[in-house]
View (cartoon, helix red, strand yellow):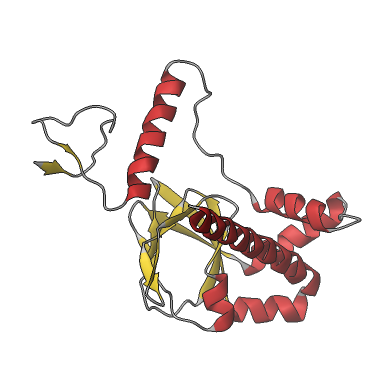
Length: 211
């Protein structure tokens, strides 16, 4: 008997005997990791509370500190944040809700403020690409948005809820015309996120070659 995972701990045998069934290895590993973390929290070894949301100001501060030799001061940072908040649309997704499906036109770049999105397993050029989770502070959909490519896989909310900051083409043009410094800061965040994804992909490829 094969059973799908439920809200119970995957470290415990399911009711009625049998075993848990996951659609891929990464999902099984993630379920075990979550269960062990829950046990550690219950035992008082780790603080609970889950992943903390990343506010736009926190993200701007973190990214600009890393890339700028002279990061903006508090007043300039507040002005950048205000300009971006005027151009970004805040969206809410419920658990399992789809941001966009495989093959869809990606009309927005989204910044995960809280929660997590998962890009489902798919194939690119005959090569299997495993599912990937994107937590708070990660930019999603930038490649497809800027290169006008269809989405290679469905992206959905993988947590109880997701709060996203979305930037469409009209808002992008408006920021370029009226708030170029704020747009440059946002582009820096997107670039760092894309570089992080590329670095992880290279590490995974090197690991696969070594194995």
